[in-house]
Amino acid sequence: MSKDVFFQDLGHLDYKECWDYQEKLFATNVELKLRQRREPESALPETTNHLLFVEHPHVFTLGKSGNAANLLLDEEALDQVGARYYEINRGGDITYHGPGQIVGYPIIDLEHFFTDIHLYLRYLEEAIILTLAQYGIKSGRIEGLTGVWLDEHDPKKARKIAALGVKCSRWITMHGFAFNVNADLQYFGHIIPCGIDDKAVTSMHAELGYQLNFEEVKQKLMKNLERVFGMRLVEGNSSREGV
Image 1: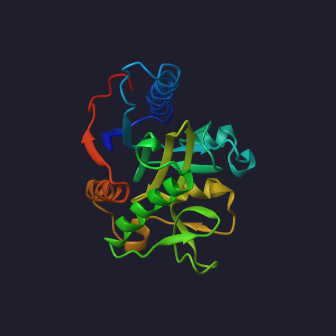
Image 2: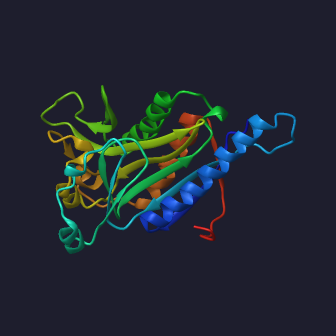
């Protein structure tokens, strides 16, 4: 099975518009797998793998296992801070997306790689950990919690720099990760991030004391995703037609 992954950098895009695009790619792959199983003798094409990078305008999203009380703003206050709010179909609790954050959405068929959703999450984390190391930032994991953390062994200092939340059906994934590069950390003060009220959130620029070259970080992250997953990123449709 192909480990080619069609890559698209969507730039700045509204969350709902991007969510709809993800759903379209996801549904196409799921339907194809259902047809493959119904019609095993048919010469049907393989499912296709995709990776989307995007920056969203300020938005808070709540996963299906989340608690709406972890959003600390009412509708009027959301308008005042210029943010939107959506309840969505990924796992996890509440998180924030905004400018200066690399949001990655892999819509991939794990049967092309391995059928282990926990390993999939660890691999996403590993690619981010490797990217941070290239900037001299040591990071790791906290047992029982998803995401990438700094000072992960010290409960008083531990702070999250990347959050993960995914959906998987018939081994097709969607949603993904949010990696704080030059993110405005004030927005995390409007939520209880991921429902965890005793841990801080950070960003690469806050740790290093300067604004990062955003495109450079993207390129390093792409190479690390290729390395960790053994995938090959190929340019997908660079236009937003259908997005």
